Length: 425
Ligand code: PLP
Image (tube, rainbow, N blue to C red; front, side, top):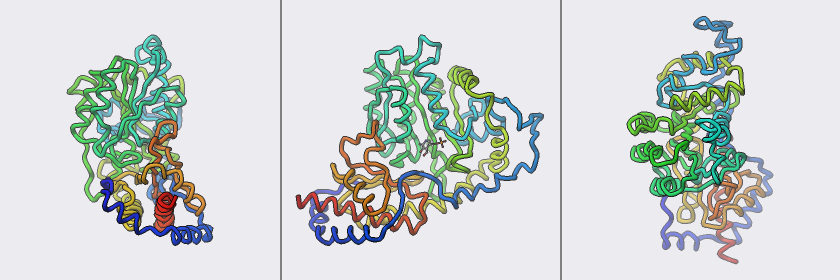
């Protein structure tokens, strides 16, 4: 991300702020009666349309390799769908389970098994410990934290750096605290800071399984594995290979989905894990469903038959998303240089903005007054609490490019106004 402005630049930028004209600008924006939304990282309608061919692609071919796709069964998923998951997650196909439309559901079930049923039977359930501590890199994905809140985990925040979580902190927590049960992580184009785990971080993550108490699991949520906004794909070291080398394959649960590839509400989710973990999850999921939607699996396999088709499809997404992300960071650069810092992501769906401490809630409120909805301040932290009240997650994918520009004018004005008000107070 951009470095924090140095003192002199900050003083110069702040001196340029004129409270009266910023109040007038804000009043003028309010009078425009805007209704814009930068809250959720949803694909836009034109992104969804890239996959409209899914409808009708089977052309009545409901039988595949002797399987009637319309009928019950097949808890693992079709072999070809497992291969698609394997490509996405960079894991062997035999380690993959294919689920319904939401990887969040797979993650919830995985955390439920660890917490209440145990990876090695009820005795091993994390809930038998005095507390169930879960490491949460922050800023992070709010819905991970909601899962942990629901399962009464104690969330332990750890700073997310540009190359992944602060591993010195993670390693010392895992070594010192026997109650640490799990860790959430979005390893590539992370939600919301766009961080990408470096090779070193991948190796250190793989080694955690040897440092931690039995039952420890990392949820490696690779939701943005192929969502590069750059012309060339951005590689990331294989965690599966690193775990094989470290002998820790059972310590990681890999997940991904096609939510931001095909239809967000009607895609496929994938989970991969070591053989024992997979057996426990398969057994659990067999109590939840008689089998996933194989019709949709086959539709996806036909739309995305190989890595080249997947890459070409993702390049079409990038052509739609990148201009919006660029417009977002361009607005920030134009209006907030010297006053705030932000990320310039190379993929994924989000830009993180850090206002001076103590102003994020006020900025979100000022933007709402001017008709622009922003994700609540603090949303990217466990229990919605940003101790600095500084971070705001911007999600520009859904609105049109023109709406992104309009909304960002409002955001910039609101940050400038909040700083000017504080200076005047
Ligand atoms: N994981 C991350 C990091 C996300 O950002 C999102 C959606 O925003 C999801 C998971 C949700 O994925 P799914 O639609 O597969 O449940």
